Length: 272
Image (cartoon, rainbow, N blue to C red; front, side, top):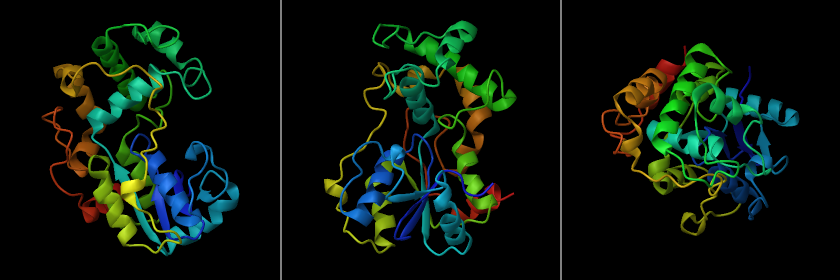
């Protein structure tokens, strides 16, 4: 199994477990900058050098050895499940991707046909009922996660706890799990704990949002998308995310966490 989704600086100053839709583009670029004094030219997810990634076979033994001996500071970042799933919908389902095509080829036509979802036409720019379509997408999300039908769950909407647990189960331990909602504070706590080749000034770091502009703008407040049934589905899919990462399930309008993450609890509950 190893350590999928794990990135490490070439200097081995820090190790990061990627959680999709949780500021991973910005974090990757900060890691790259801390080693090289410049940002990667392009989307950091496309970088095949300058940063060790589990997806690159040559990086695997280095990452494995580092993580198993807990040689470097290790962290990850989480996000409110309500805003994370909405972001996945507008970016991946309604949006046109960097390559000018729809995400995962036949996925959107499948959703239109089987779930009656609208995505704003061919270019994603036509008006459509965002709330109705999102709720149908949520039903599809539940089906993929609960029943693995009509397809396996996608990394962008599978639970954060699942991503984070693979690192623990295979022998890793986190030193820090912080929130996208208080990103600067969280990232500062990581940088304070490690030695970097190049100083990172968080005030001057742009936000690298790879999904921005891909899809239509969200027209309504977060809470409008989640009726009673939607919230029932959210609990079914993301119960552990709400509980472990201290987000407010009862109030979708409150994107802020209700407390800090208890690392011992996370390791105990996700290490089985």
